[in-house]
Image 1 (cartoon, one colour):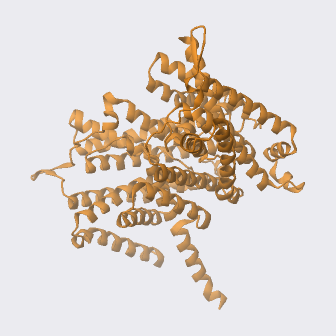
Image 2 (cartoon, helix red, strand yellow; image 1 turned 90 degrees about the horizontal axis):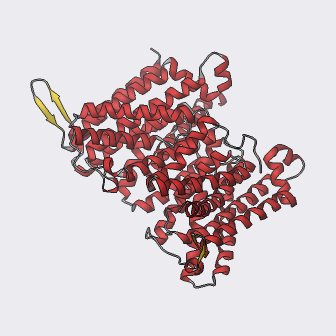
Image 3 (cartoon, chains in turn red, orange; image 1 turned 135 degrees about the vertical axis):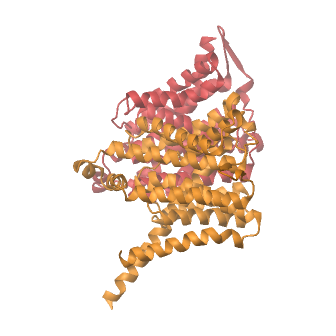
Length: 287
Length: 325
């Protein structure tokens, strides 16, 4: 039973990590908390539902198209709600992204209704049994996709010119402008990366659960706990905290109650804040 | 008394008199209902205005204190038979206590983390209201909350059931809240709150305990939120976990920001306009939330000072004109 809870928790952690890493990345580079981040996950889930379940495209193609579509959505969101407010007081971006979140979530309610839908992904019926742990293929795929995405993200940030520009912008935006790095471009690119990760989460993890317009709120609620615990702007910290939260929730849900599972993240977040206000992994912004 | 202050007092008296005689001209129960809701929202908007407009803290928790106040007085009335006034006081106290408990860990954080923690608190409150079914009956909500009853010496108990009675009761609550609010922002503490908002380092340098000032502002916003929630519960007589929906946070932000955060009358006007207009337009709630999002986004981009900021700019422009001529 214990091993089963830990495996389930790791899959859950992969979802939190995919959403939270983008959130932390955007904060690390732009010092903007994107309150519409959860809606990108929700849109990704509906994207997959439309492409795979409704239009009957092959699953891998539907996943790729969803990720690309969400990157485009991230660019649009950056243009509409983030880039115009970068140099204004911090409330401006908070409120602008909150407004974007409201628009997207209620737009989805009007367009798709609040009915929960099931995407029925192909690997959901394949069960892999090892010792006394049973895992569906879809869960393994979600875990593998998350790990692969993080490896690719680290390579991109460390090894490419665009990644270097992102790290530079995280350190000093004025110096970037002085040496000719367009901070607006960096902002847009960072948002596209974060949105792509949300799209991936929507395409591989969301089909494990019901899909409805409110799922972004829950996802972002957990992601906030993750980024606070990992240290706002600390990307590796967010990955680690997501794993801790996923496993911790799964154990709390399995051994205490399902309500305890949902309250767990908030209680853990408050405890971390009381002991270490800068997060578990230090204050320094690391992208 | 200066001419400006006299003018202000005249406007104030006119506004109070207008509010007092307004029900004489409103015959429809539906319109009266909107007016009572406006009064409740004014109290709640003042709660957000205190933290956001005066203390400069973007708190997304006022709806949580509103909901906590509503549940507190509803449960006290239903389970223990507490009278309205006692429940109202307990609801304010509960709002104050929860705000204090959340304020301690969250006010030490960066501004961004503070926003996140206050939003998470509202979501957690909804989770608790939905899942703690033994206490709150979960999604089924709490029906049959008794209306407010006031014991008058010699006259017996006066039970408020009609909309007009509620209008006047809420008017009394609003005037008391406005009076307390105006007194607070003019007090030493109020000036300290604004000083911390404007420049925390400078405020600390002149001996203001910034942490304490922010904590007090946040705790008092919890009190106001709890009071508003108690009134709502007794007026509507039914509450459920949707009270904590983000929709209300959104509504409030629009009222306070578009009215003009950091002003008193601007926020009152914002609460009135954004209660009455959408009701009269009768839009489907989801579509309304969608349109509100667009209004909010546009307001942040185009008019960050809100209605009050716009009026102030107009007045400044008019005052500058003669010197130019």
